[in-house]
Image (tube, rainbow, N blue to C red):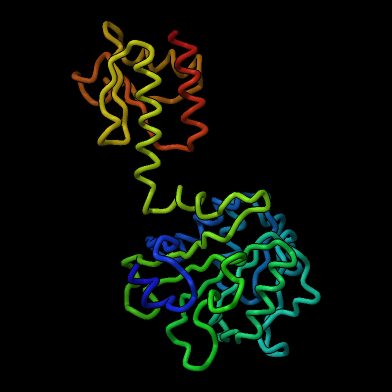
Length: 296
């Protein structure tokens, strides 16, 4: 709430739309995980390497063309002195995602209100999401916008990431935030904030606790005694009279689900297996269904 009231006053950004995190670079990676490998991205050229690096890691980039030093599935928007460090959007092809940093790293150029309005309108026309990096906004000393959300309509097309490290000496401490507006939606109408909420630091514990609950209910329905899962991300399941390694082997071979034999935690763990709640919800549900089928 304090970030919204202090840094986004007058933009309509709410405290509930701000996710405090372990830094802007980490949130860039989280967003790439969220977006997946099937999207096409555009970046300023030159720009902060993390945008391209994360695109490569998640499989968005395509092949590297050695002659040009560019990846063939990334759109490089020329932002040089000859065009006032702002891309010619009239010749820029449509992409799913546009990474844009202002003030830019490395050129130091800050986009004007008019330029950012062009960018927002371009994203609206093309159904693109702008990932706007405002990590250096505190250095702006002219009339350039410090946030993309100063532009009307930006909440419908943009996500903003920022960091304390560039102006508050928090480098290495890892502290930043990301703004995901409630108005921003995928083409199917689903709110992006609900997806980001799942992977953000604020709600990740609740997400895994819900996973644990699903696992507990699955094993309990089989008549097994189940412990944990309520105050921890692990579920401790008792298979009386069995060797925990044998249970582990049986589950792995017949369901392809990986558990941990209780004996690995010491003699007191014999007859138990540990099941982790860390994972995607769909995988947890599928694992639960396979367990029920195996032990029913």
